Image (cartoon, helix red, strand yellow):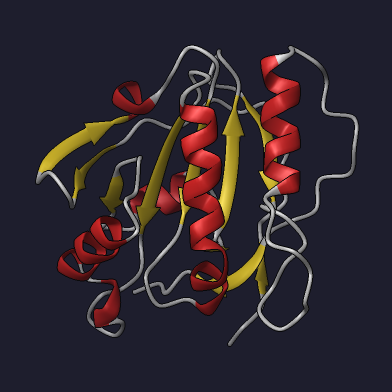
Length: 184
């Protein structure tokens, strides 16, 4: 399993727009559809990556906690499904239903959206404020498969708590680590 970090780019960029298939509803979902009053978390995930499998329950828990606080969440899979059929829209739908995703799970067949967000790995998290400016590109928490760190979402939860209080993020943003996006 390749360990690829989040691409570190300057913060403050505007969330790129998208219109992608929500695999659970077979309808198109755009940036405007998932954006909420207090911000948005854009996550690049997939079905087969052991890093995602390791933290998926905590991702769902964090989303359930903060959707109530008017922060939007969306998950996008951009992997090449020809070489990674476990990431097909049908299997994405199965995962979303089995884990009760409270957020849309979108399929990016051209990989254009992943490129627009400079996504590099799964999981890859970008947090946008109420003006849809990026304020965080980093990890969920310190847990990785096999390292025995607790899966608690502490980094992402801290970012969201500070965002809700309109406070500046004044800590080192650690990049997420995961499998590389499977480019075509």
